[in-house]
Image (cartoon, rainbow, N blue to C red; front, side, top):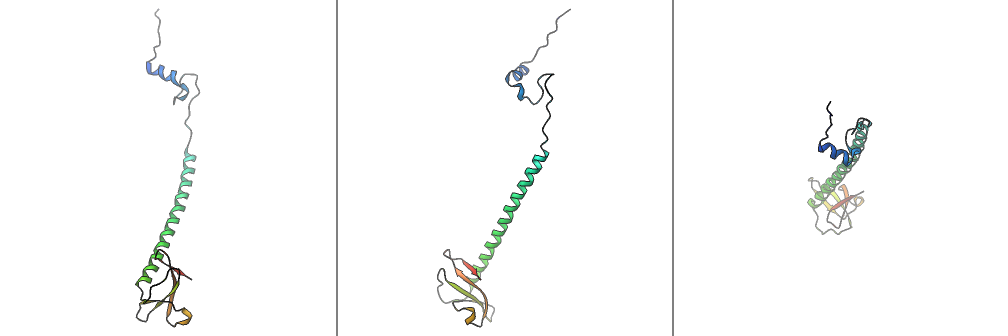
Length: 133
């Protein structure tokens, strides 16, 4: 009767000799079976939280864009209006509608003039105009 020797390949020996506990499969017959962890709920919870974070940031950006657009429109309306003085930073001025549909910027208070008052504005240091109520 001949002797049968089970010969291991060099790659099998290397894997067992290095760190058998890190192998993605059992390294011997008596080893416990390795079952992959179910990450479905982790992924769903993570995605849900990320969606909320992005949704909140998106809404903030939309709000900032709308505010910027309103500020631009007000600034444009004031600069395109008629006035014969150089406005001073930090001072309040009043925008009125003319009978021809144009606009006039004035120092005159709405209570002191019969023209249709549109809104009041203040000149900022960056030369933009902000509506004041």
